[in-house]
Image (cartoon, rainbow, N blue to C red; front, side, top):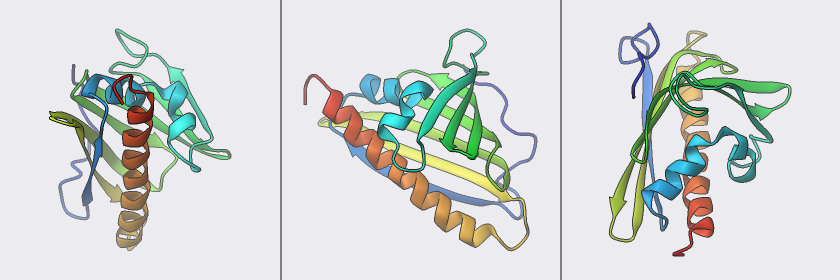
Length: 162
């Protein structure tokens, strides 16, 4: 199920985008389960995410489209609204608060590989403050790259086949 993204087109002028890749020895359903469960992010996502919870459930399931998760290191807490929930291959969200950006959308695509799962995490955004885009690109790509690597590792560690 997919809901519309942000009203601003992040592929337009002034936008920035990146993609990070990771590989997990776990199968796509195991990776997806960790990614989609906001309550467990603090266990695997790293030092920037010490608190993780649901602010609001989704339209048809707790973690589905329309759900809002809260992630962060108080007092800085981000709000992310789920806009695509297609287990076990596609999960997407938009940032509704907590970052100095607008029109931030991230799509996580999981693909089965012979030895596990390929994780492709792409995001696009428009900086809130002109001139900050290049710095935000470096910071967000690094942060999301860390999330992807830690997600891959955590899923593999919890996988019964690992």
